Length: 256
Image 1 (cartoon, rainbow, N blue to C red):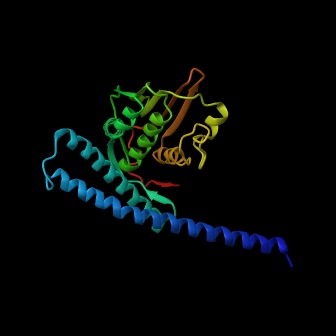
Image 2: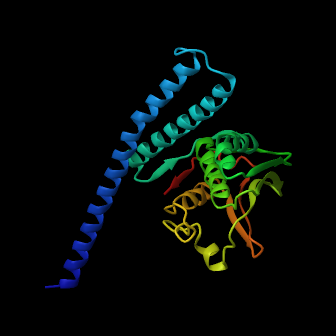
């Protein structure tokens, strides 16, 4: 009797069982989250239409931001559900013209109150002559949101975050620079890996999936994601996407 072969079969079966359970769990949670998210969207739309009384201009501005955030979350949940139901972790990327500059402004507007809570100023510069890329708007927005959230979360209080959209060779690029703890070379090598997070040591919540997913999405668009760190506590994160019609005439997918 080949005990090692039997053990290998058992281990493979156990692994497949765990994977099925994981997929079912994620799909179930995503489905359960969709209902309250849709309820929030409908409630906010009714409030903004004045169904429950007059909405002040300052209130409208905040509610519209929250509504946009809820709609974004709903689109992400739909994408996640599709992934686990149909493609076992693979998402087909849409082919459309996307303005990196416009996406950046949208994301900054959504995160402005998170920045204000830490007394952080955000400065956005668009020096790109070509800011349009061909890709999946929802997924590229996800990348910018991940990077922007990190830029605020890890930045020191009462500092500035500098964001730049620019061109480099045949690429449209996005990057942020902030004042935050220095990342050693060892950390930089691991920072885009799955489930790797240094947030615990920094007393910040995180599970290490945002940067991993961002790298997968950027690479699926034919681009690159990067990180630079300086000992004077300055960090730079960013990505670049080809300006050519990389996705326009080809079917692309991203697997997480």
